[in-house]
Length: 332
Image 1 (cartoon, rainbow, N blue to C red):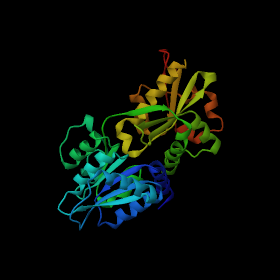
Image 2 (image 1 turned 135 degrees about the horizontal axis):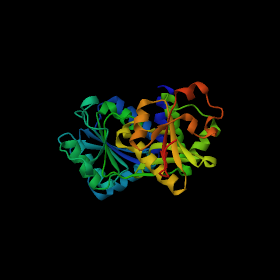
Image 3 (image 1 turned 60 degrees about the vertical axis):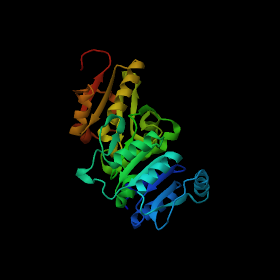
Image 4 (image 1 turned 45 degrees about the horizontal axis):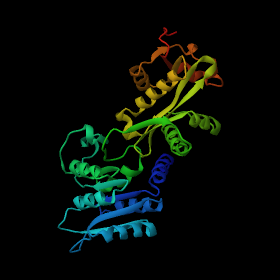
């Protein structure tokens, strides 16, 4: 496991700490056992519903209390299901009673790679049929936080990496963008680290990173982890601010998270009476992204002089500068 993969795993293990997951199936796959052990060691509480050679299963109310007691003591509990029953349906029913943070359905027939649905699906906005979608819809209606569907062998990749390997279902598009709270700093810092490791964010000193966090915005879905981060760096002497360090978790990239963050920044900047917000990039895709949000290209010389203090001249020559005017005046 390389540095980037370890950073991703730490991000998710911290996110799952003291939270409950019901995982269904995968009892014959050693990679599932390994992934569950990693989750429990990281502090998650795991209920593993699995097929076994039993003649019946518990359904009484005392069983729920016993599950809770076992999770408190050991961090995990196994729930055996007779082989003639559908383990995914049983797990969905149990999750409806327990209402965990997350239900994970390990379906050997789940689509993979190019054949799978979008990695993030809001069921309220998407029509569709199929066993997995119907089970996910049932669980979400019962109060489960979110539902992941993937193949058993992909469990660790689905839960412990930014891009995932299956499909994440939620009940509605409840993305919230707001300035970071202190408790968000660690998650945002990990997103920055990931962007640096992937090469699209510049390395920064500890002090520079702290300033980004202080001026940072985060996007999250419900009470889930941060799905994206960016900082709005102020240049008060010029009446402007810069969108800096914009990064999103891969599986949410197509969900418009980056755009939601920037739009919130533009609203706040206008409310503060700033004249403009600008961004700089060397990426053609990023140029298209900012143009779609109403930014226009300007000369780098039109940006605040303080922006270039200590800046690499060679990189400056490669930059595309974009500006979003908040006053209605013509662009320089």
